[in-house]
Length: 307
Length: 278
Image 1 (cartoon, rainbow over the protein chains, first blue to last red):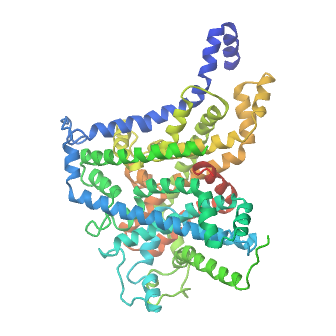
Image 2: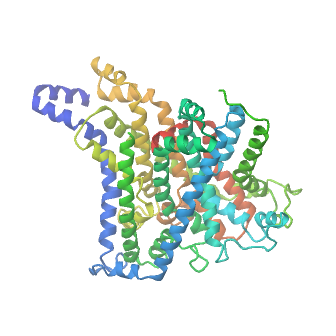
Image 3: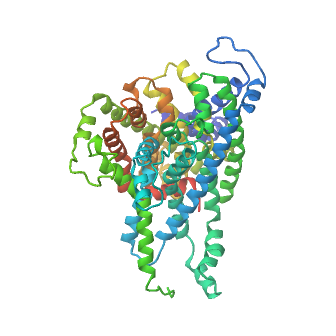
């Protein structure tokens, strides 16, 4: 009924009708736009505002302190440690994801086995992706326990006979959580690269092999350039997502032992929700948002080119 | 295909495939096997591969504990509501993007792509303040609302991509025949877009089901906790009913696992269309 009256009203006045017509797409977008304001614009404004005040939320009348919080953060030794750890964690994870994802997708893209065999392996390879961070954390905490199956396998194969406490030894913990993250995240690369590989025309390989290119030359001169847009998207997205990997680290080590696995996400979380220093946490979040904005602009631009 | 396959290619390739499968599958198999063992056998040295004392006991104790069952109910409820809300909003938005030209279209679209690069933890503190101010702390509403931040952008992009593949004539014909836009969208376009909607719905479910950070921070009491938070709390609480934690992990992973197995094709097609354009 409502629709009918709206239509007849629109029919009466051509100007009103034009306004209706122009506003239609915005009406369909209205819920999205409202949510973007509530969930994005307002919170970003708030977090930036918080970062310029002394202890907000807890203090009823917070005082404007300018860049004081940023100074505190930037001179905090733990922040430096967190940045260093995050860079290691992100760098190694992204490279690991790429190498394993690429290898597995090349293995699956073979012409030797039938679709059924390949299908089974594809499902097995994609499995780690199906588990939530909490489950992966428990799973690897069990495997990497000093009495766990990893140490057992290492001693049986004669690689190492000591029972290493992977997650509670300062010299191994960061490597161990990074390994867990690589295991958990490569399927995203594998599935995307596999889809990309299947889109590469067979003719390109034919032409390359006629020109006398061997398998490796074909890989670097045909496969890689053809996959380039996918790879750039994957690397950018993975970079941002890995900076904020929280669950795995928080559940397995909580940033410890002695800050050995402290990353930006555990650092912000502890500042906010263990120490209740919301302003300092907001300042850290502000710095990180700045970095992510730069990446986001790069990503959005690259995506639009791809369209 | 004129490239010949050498005799050793097949066995070598098979060995490589199996090694890869061990890398990804063994930890999961180990979790599954251990979830049936008595607690004392989980760190046995040497490990018992298949325990003589395997039983359903760890699973039974999970199902008999109302607190743990509640985690599952909470997760199902929150994820389902998030899926429904995300689908409705993203269908509307995708319709606008795929069927109209309007001022600010490119800008809004770019913004939606860019949101995917905003780390949720940077917004956690203002969310906490907002949720408390709106009296939504420790409620399902808080989780549903905040989950939309990361389910919507992906859903809108995937859905727009899907709707773009459907011919315009389809819904325009309805309007030429005098039907309303409402009927063109919900009566014709949406039913045709079911495969895309299923893919988007599954993704959304998976992301909502797996979410940890907001669920941990924006709820307080155990009767509001979701599965991932529940599992992680078990670790702290009764340190180390390993078999029960593992049983709970297996049960908690089943919904997403089953979705993946049944809708594998949608899953892969959907994710490739949504985030990564070939």
